[in-house]
Length: 182
Image 1: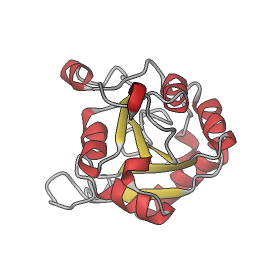
Image 2 (image 1 turned 180 degrees about the vertical axis):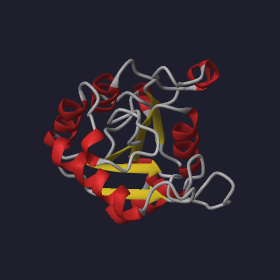
Image 3 (image 1 turned 45 degrees about the horizontal axis):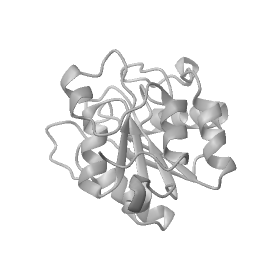
Image 4 (image 1 turned 135 degrees about the vertical axis):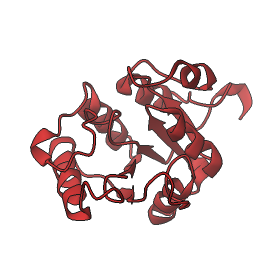
């Protein structure tokens, strides 16, 4: 894109745990869902500009027998009650050793979400808190924005071509035409 500015994405796909809501490992209890600061406002900015929003989330607790898909669904429903409706949910229930094509850092969740939204991956951005989120975005041809948290490894932060200090900052970057890799 000329001038170094990217077009505003048609869709922004978010990692769930550690990005939109507090990371509670293998959470199957909707009562434990707590939105992260700025999440509601960030989503409101996107929705207000007509940008579609979705969630792409690994839920390996299902494969490990720690969660059921019904529990994941109830947690996701609670996220929607707290943060508003999402245009698409893409969930990977597989474990790290399952070899699926949907578990991030593989691109399958992003490809599926874009297909369901009827947009090209190149018109999507993915916001997440770990390197696997950005690797999945890159593999799918989408832009990625890292929002580091205490669990983000230093090498993931160093490798990230685009990062923001928090969720609201990531959304503002994308809406201001930023978020294009350096």
